Amino acid sequence: MDLAGAAAQADELATNGSAQELATLRTQWDDELEAQARSSDFRERALAFRAIGMFRWRAKEELLRRGLDDGSPAARGSALLSVELLSRDHPSTVNSVRPLLHKMLADEDEKSAVRRLAVMALKNGSAQRDTIVLLEGLGADDRADGDLRRAAGSVAQTLKRKAQEKR
Image (cartoon, rainbow, N blue to C red; front, side, top):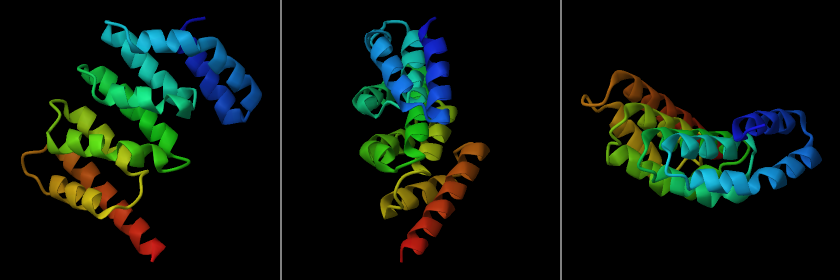
């Protein structure tokens, strides 16, 4: 079995609640995942960053942070997918990388797909005013592609509702 197969198995175990088996699988694949995340091949790095989310491996969040700064759009996108997955249960994952996500949006990552993934990850974070303002601005930016503008506007509205519910 390769890392992709192990990640798929881990995702299945995480979904079905087999915590002990998932922990065992993490232990077996720890070194391989770390090595692939440091590979010179962007495809291996992308697979490793995506596997972190599939393994529900919160202990590897620092590695994901490096993935968000990776030179490869594929690796950045895979890291964002994992951030989004890990943050579904708790906003701490998004909140811990919020400055990097803001930077991706404000500095206009060269790939609009990466920017859309950053927007979708922010949806699971806390409703912070600076994020809402950034997303509203992006949603109104005529220079951004239509899908990105729609996603940013939608997530801004979702975060506003979250903020209202907390009051």
